[in-house]
Structures are given as C-alpha cells and as structure tokens.
Length: 216
Image (cartoon, rainbow, N blue to C red; front, side, top):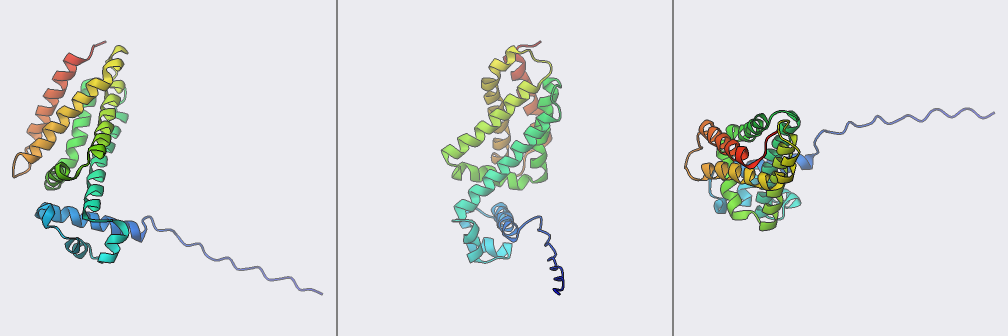
C-alpha cells in the first residue's frame, strides 16, 4: 500500500519593495549633486564629493552614471519633466474652462515648483545653458510647446478656428513663459520675486493670446 505523499510546503512570497536599492542609490546621487550645485560652481564639483554626500562609493556611481556630465543631464531632464507633468495636469483638471483660467492654472503649476526650491531652480537654469545639447533641448522645448497646444485646445471659450493657429501660438506662449522665468532666475544673485513674476507672465500671456486667437 502506497502512502499518500505529504503536500509540498509553499514558500512564502516576498513582498517587492516599492523602490529598489538601485533606484534609491541613483536618487541619492542626484540629490547630492543638486545640493552641491546650489553651494558651488559646476566645474568645482567632483564625483568624490557627490558620492561622499550621497553616502555611496565611486563604484556605485559608475554603475548608474557614465560621468558627472551624464548625471547632470539626467538631473536637468527630470527637473524639466517635473514642470511638464505639472502643466499637463493643470490642463486635464480644467478642460473646457475659459482660456484665461487655464493659463492662470498653468502659471500657478509652473511657479509652484520654483517657490518650493528657488535656489535649485536658479542652479538648474545656469547649468542648462552650459550642458543642454541642441537636440535634447529642442525635444524638451517641443514637449512644452505641445503642452501649450493642449491649453488652447482645451479652452471652452475658443472657436474651432483657433485650433489651426494653436501650434504657432503655443510656441510663442512657451517662449514668453520660459524667457521670463529662466532669465528672472539668472539675472539676479538672489531668487526672484515670484509673485511679481507671476503677474508679469499673466499679463504678457493673456495680452498676447487676446490678440493672437479668434474668440467665439
């Protein structure tokens, strides 16, 4: 008589961490680099200083980044992407509302990040001038232009004829906003007055859009 085989015990499943060790290390290196960038000029920042502040090794640094320049470009990209995501969310939550309301929501979303980290954004715009390659810059800039196209297309008080003008109009909108914000952070040794900057940007954008787009 063959006895039944005992059931095979099942191994308890491991819970996967929400963030892997690799991702946490890469984030620590990015944060350390940004902190050092606020305190010092880019050429003076060494990889050893970055890893020391991040609490990791040189070997770990090269597992994630090919060079200090590679790390800097990643930080620039992620910070710009943060603004782009905020712009898109502002549009989605107010789709169908009047254009002026959408523009104000976009401005608020863009300046909120600058209010939270003014020194880091000043360092960002300075570094961007030195490190952004032409193609990478054009791609990111176009994404913001596309975001402004969404603003125009989402407005509930514009006629269909405004859609045909949206791409060219959106490019001017991004040029106005980027120019005002970036140069305000670069032109002075201290962070700019963002309340005044928001008022100026609102007047410039709404004044331009009033003349550029047909109304329903």
